[in-house]
Length: 478
Ligand SMILES: [Zn+2]
Image 1 (cartoon, rainbow, N blue to C red):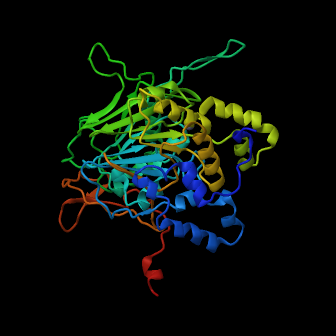
Image 2: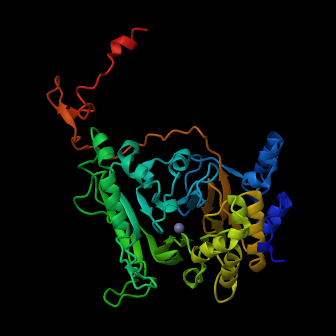
Image 3: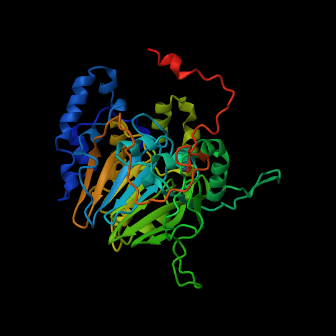
């Protein structure tokens, strides 16, 4: 019987986790990640649960609980260090794992968001990042689990520290057309990232006006290289569409690679095609200071990833999907629907074994296996993790592999890779961040201050003057 035909087996012991993940091998710090004080937390969960929830391997993640803790804000990033935080790791948003987002911080002070799916904003807030840090977003494709939080990120930018435009990178129009058996056609479609951001701007008029009694721009904002002159307002979106067909060939006209999305301050971000559901999905690669990471987004197993990773990548973040039969069971779908679930998976995603196969191929000389491989976009529970690591290990028995959960944090430097679990509060507030900008523009809703004679913000300008508002003197009487 093939492992993918089996139901996920129940439970995962600490020894299983060590053995299956391979983290116990080698001298990397991640070898220690599984045996630190976090192990007590796993036991505490077991002890405090007592009932069906914590004792059911489908309702706990011992693997993650056993990672050593990381306390956000307690460790400045070293000048040659990269930190990758997983702030959304499931295609299905749940309390334990929201939809997809990967946050990359570099020792030079730069930071980048890869995807911003439904529910990721609270995870950023909990990690101590406000929306000023979510100003450069690279979208892999336009599924809602990869961009569903954009309305909040865009609309509340000026309230939570982003006092400049929102910068978004993503694939251009697919160009796809479909001819049905009866010769009718669909497409081409207005389905590019700029179409999405245009629509986002249009749907946000009520929101943006309501917030525009505050200054939404600064006259001393220095337009960065990736900006556009004249676009300085928080409610501007600067969209960089990327030709999703490009994969790094040298453009004879410029002598440059044809897939560069971003190239500033020593940071290069390139893109290449992903094979996912329909044309127009991409993956990203970030390179800085001799360190690199690839973020696959969603994709079927493809040669593109191998080609991009074979020269050596420090961290390969790749989607995986559980076997169709397991998915069916988790979703409460009837067993006879397995063929349909399988067909959907086959159009879009990377089976666990296929990820192992890709890693195996990367380990075959002259290629170089990644220093750490991460499976994500995956519902991480004791039983599913055990199944995933088992299948990956069939092809890739020794290299370092982890399965991502929300709040997993990876520090990467030349000599060390450290995988930990961020300890955050469920009650964290977004924290005010200081700005170096000093010259706010006049708010769009303003009045003349009676005492100073100067323009001032008018938060009440857009209210219905005839609304039957209760006189505060009445409720303040007690
Ligand atoms: Zn997708």
